Image 1 (cartoon, rainbow, N blue to C red):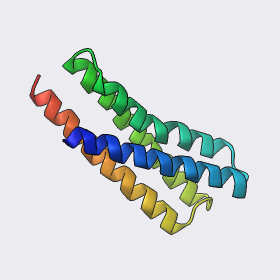
Image 2: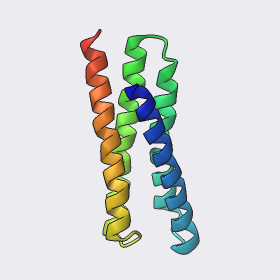
Image 3: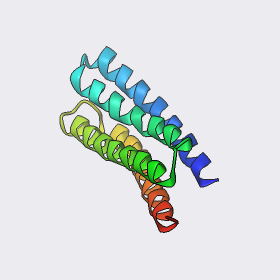
Image 4: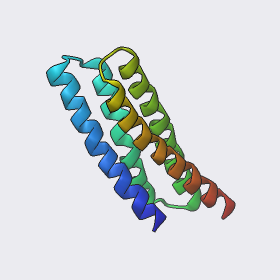
Length: 117
């Protein structure tokens, strides 16, 4: 059940990231940071999907750990976009909060999986 919630939330987050990236490119004419955000923000869910068919528990943990690293990187880009005035405070708070939820869920999933090794 938790994996399904994580999968659904990460997919919804990826959609938001794609839309934010599109907005940055079309309205702000920002191409470098938006591409970094797009790459890391969509990788979170892609890696969670990969983990569904992991070859072993260790492989599952590895893929989920990489997803966690991508989520952490995405937090960096969201902060940087706010601090360079590409996104406003409200956009930052919305994206940052959703990303932090994914981080917490990933940490929990990894810890649970490690305890069952």
